[in-house]
Image 1: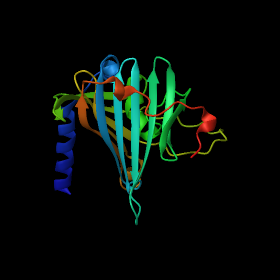
Image 2: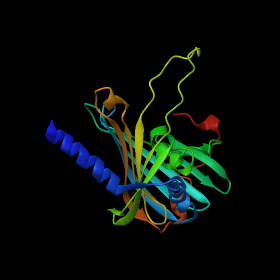
Image 3: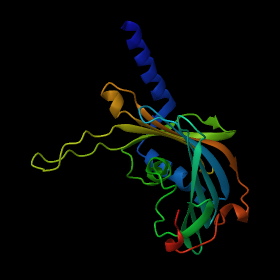
Image 4: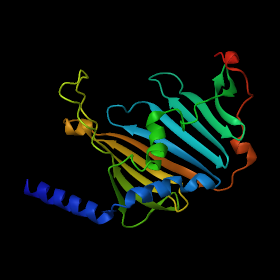
Length: 245
């Protein structure tokens, strides 16, 4: 027990040394999270899940960004217990003419206009890595690492961020009591604001005696040269009524 206590004390001390908190770090995180809005780049990520939700699924996400055009592609591969892996691809594209959603129908990729421009990849777990850090009110506590890291040959500046505790429901509220989620984000950015790594650790299950649920987004490659073809619609534009599997 004494050895465990010493190890915990060392971990706390190490965390204090690696991350430094201040009242201005929330704004600093927002600054990094929005810095890449004005640059051209293409980044490819692997997205993994550990814990009880982990399964035979692998996800690759791609962002091709050349302002004002941006293309986001999501490739989700499911590995069944028998048979060949199945990959489903989807795209969200924004350019000067509007917002578009694209998917594969009957072996061909087709696109239609899409009024929902608030999603990154159409997956809330993945979208949160790009959306939450952009809002100054998303986290109650933000700490910045005291030294940079190297990720995919890029120098990265990292932040640790925790959300505010939700307010409990009034005792007379008819709403059922739902245990609050406790989680933490670890986010690392390049000097020009490209997200290099995102980790969301859901501590709720761990606090109940189980295994912490972790979502990890890791950059695989980055280029700052984007061709016009990289941000084009991946298929013809059709009306929604024509989109039949």
